[in-house]
Image (cartoon, rainbow over all chains, first blue to last red):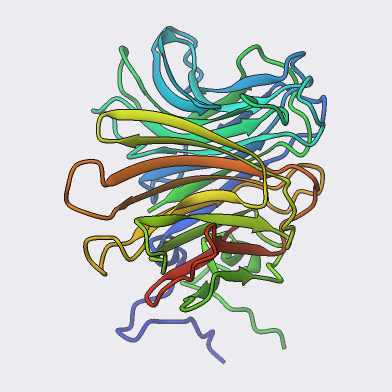
Length: 197
Length: 192
């Protein structure tokens, strides 16, 4: 008996390309065990059937501090090409900050080993639109926050954005996440990468 | 004889492949005349939760904050941090040990039009973790009139401070105990 393949009403094969075009897809999950690594890396090339990348994460490091920042380096570029801007609220204060010519983007706020509770983690997401472009410099937008304690001013929640300046535009093929001062991630830190059509 | 579902010739349709198609709708709630609604028995098989809401409230005011609770915890154990812009003024607020955490602001009956509403986009990363506090980040906004100072853009984030554990129930409520009105809608998705 011939093999039957699902088809749409107009006779189009329901294939993986068709399903991939329906929306987004999980491209990978990394959930390191405590004390095993200070970096999480997604290595491509990422499928060309997607146009945008999104990362959703929840993280904490072993840094000897209450708070830490989540950094993202693109394409293993250690040169001073990452530029970022963030605005956040902490207590009753709106604060903004920028980073010029750094070796990674600041993409979020997370907790460190000295947070009030071992259960305090930072969480957030970031989006890299049109990651396959080789003519436009890549950028990201995201939001994130953490609570490192139960007192006033212990919250940090805001919006982050940035761009790769200088250098030749190339498709995003590597995303490497670390703390600002790299320290091992603490479980249940989890990073999930999605491709969006 | 085993029959395998295949796509085009040579491509196996595996559950692993299908499960990675994200997001997947978990449920929809269209509250009207009630002050709370819940998504319960949330499957623990996803990686993250995404909630999108849009609506109005019955407050005889410009509106009310919309709160979120996890796992039916209604005690004063929620923190939230707000960052917002209104006209040319950025501002921030925090709430400590409240009975719910804010995810946005929906207009009330003092809005210019009954068609004015608010909206919120809430992400709950790694919601099934059992050794971290349930937490979220959100983007929200509303515009209740056409005059200056009547719109707001917000970033919010918060967590339940008293209990770890996977999120199995999400409750949305009006923080002034008014009711949601018709055409209000919340959708919850799981991201695989």
